[in-house]
Length: 449
Image (cartoon, rainbow, N blue to C red; front, side, top):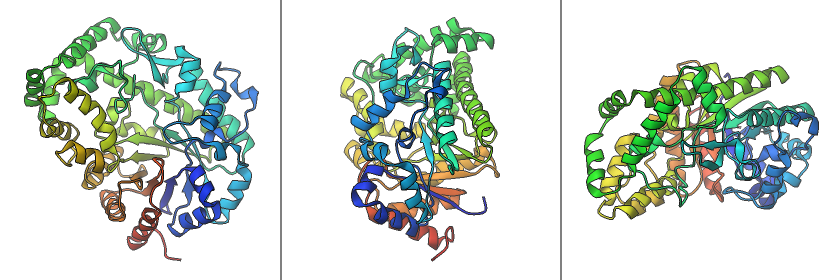
C-alpha cells in the first residue's frame, strides 16, 4: 500500500439528513477516501439471472432494510437514492463508495428460509445466523456481488462484514438461552450441526457424535448455575496456561474449533476466487472481530494472507461494554452473589482486556483505549509483516476526541497499515471525525492540504 488506507463506516441516512455535500466535505478534510455505508449492498437493482442457483430472494433483505431496518436503523434514503448520482457527488470530494456485504447475519432471510440457519446439537435453529456451508447462502452472496459489479462500474473494493459461524450473538443473548458460565459458555456455543456441516465434518474423518457428547458435557457444566461453580471456574482458569490445560482434556473440542474456522475460511476463499474471476482488480477486504476472541466466530487472523487483500479489525473498545455486559448481567441475575469485580475480573483475564471493575462504568465507558494497541499488535504478529491490516476505531459515543486521537496513535504504533472510523451506532460526534483526521495528519499518515 503506497497510500495510507483511510476509510469510514458511516450511516447514509444521517449524512443525507445533514446534507451530503457537508458530510462529504468533512470526510475529505479528515483524509477519508473510502466510505462503507451500512446496508450499501441493498441499494442496487436486482437482476434475477444472478440468483438462479439460490432460492433466497434478495428483495427480502432489501425491503426489510428499507422499511424496518436493524440496530443501525432504516436504510430508506440509501435504498431509494440513485447510487450513481451519489457516487458522482462523492468523487468531487475524492471519496469512493465501496461495497459492504454481510454474509452471516440476516433475521428476515432466516425467517423466510429456516433451513439456511445455523443449527445446534439439539436441532434448534438460529434466528440470527446463516450457515456459510449452506449452498443457498453461498450462491446468494456470490450472485449478489456479481449482480452489483456487472452493473456498476468503478467499484474498487468489496468488504465482507463478519463472515463467521455462531449460533446466536452472545452479546444479544435471547431469553430462551440459559446463562452460561465463562469460560465454558464460549466453548459450547457457536457450533453448527446442520446437514451441510455434518457432511463436511464426516468427510474429514471427524466423529460428529463424539463431538456432540463433548459439547453437551461442557454445556451442562457451563449451565450449572451456583456461586461455587462460578468460583471453581474463576479459580481454575486464570491465564493462558490454564486454558491449554483445559483443551488438553477436551481435544475433540479443539478439533471442532479448528474445523469451524476451516468452514469460514472455505467460504471466504470461494468468494475471493469468484470475485477475482469477475474483476481481478477489485480488492477484497474482510472485517474481523478483535483477535482475542475472533476464534469464537471461526475467524483466524493467521489465515488471512491467503484469503483477502486486506484485513479490517473492528475494535469497539468504547462501545463494547454495553454489549458484553448483557451475558455477564444474565449470569449475575442467575447467581446474585457474584460481585461486579469478580465477574469483570474473570472477563478481563479471559480476553486480556482492561477496564472498570464497576458494571455500570463498564457499560458506559467500555474497555480502555490502551486495548487498541494490544489487539492491533496481535493482529500484526498473526498475519505477518506483509499483509495489510486496517484498524477500525470507534467514533461513536461514548468515545471522545481524546479517545479517538489516542486510538489512532496506538493503532499506528502497533503496526496498522490503514485506519477506519466506525460510526454505525448512530449520531457519532462530528468532532470525533475531525480529531481522527487531525491525528492522522500529525502522524504523517495523510498529507496536509
